[in-house]
Length: 266
Ligand code: BMA
Image 1: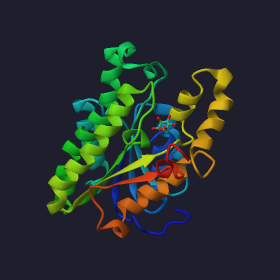
Image 2: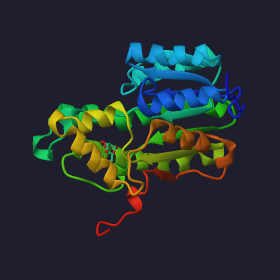
Image 3: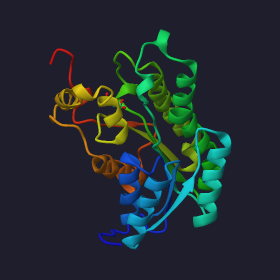
């Protein structure tokens, strides 16, 4: 494949939510560097398009349809990956949702919205780890990277389940890291700021009249003066999954244009 550095030659990588946004960019980046990539999602057309994009360039990718917020879905995703590629080295727990109907205070948050966000954003991370770790052990180690958010570190009005899910991702990252370090399984998290993805377009475009203003505000909240691109997340995930990060585990990395560095008074 073009630009193959070989950094991930022979490695098997699973990306949940791999059809779009950060998942798509990261799946493509892993494939460009030699990995065999299982793209797990429920958005068939978008996922097939990512697979076609990768395979047309000579890379290896396959689409696995599974709802990883359920035990059966996560088990299927891992089994199908191992069947396709013979093992598992890297798990990017990327999938996340922040649906328009979730923007409200706790009193008005329907229980079903809370449950769905928790299932997709955090339970899926647990379930994919649960079913994936035995296969990493069989290879003598592996890397799990959880996609959290700056919203797991600081907060704002209107996001109770989303914020709670992202805080939980960070705690789970630390816990798994401590538990499995002795088996050479490293566990890390990233905290993206606002990234140009379908999730963020939904978030900023809840009211189409204010979309442009919201986008400008979002850009201003980042000291670098703009929102991020999915490829800028992919670069960091690949580094964390690589041997270059061999002494990192249990840590999160903000990829947020300086947002978390900025004081409220600044
Ligand atoms: C993300 C999403 C985005 C938001 C960003 C920064 O996780 O919630 O909608 O812009 O955090 O707050």
